Length: 177
Image 1 (cartoon, one colour):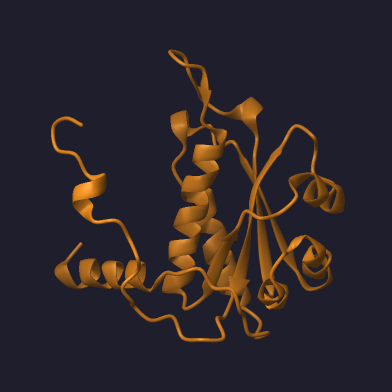
Image 2 (cartoon, rainbow, N blue to C red; image 1 turned 30 degrees about the vertical axis):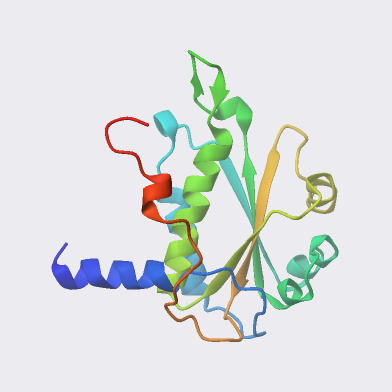
């Protein structure tokens, strides 16, 4: 990457924020396709790809409105339901940790960053009832519903802003804890 590409990447990351109010403007199909390719290409432990994503638009999207606790999410033209498949995931032997949710989180984070680059807003919605989402969308019991991502054009522009974050000295350790 050259310096300009690096600068653009950090600019995109700094504009990413959780959007809770969306315009009703439709997203071009080619943008959605690029975001789906981002999910497809995401890394996963041992390349197991233990995930499934349900893309909801139009009437299918509206069926999910009852699981949202905030009204603004109901205007997002697209919702992405991110599901983990624990049976397909890599499991670390020393402590038996299943990486399905980690892998889904990596994929969704990359999609969210790509959506920001596309000029789209997103919100990772975890305040849902996974059992209700499964019932509405006929998701198999063996799947874990990790989150629903609201996706669309934000009502307010995505601008770089300082976020309330812990100082680096509180979260970064060099060499040892």
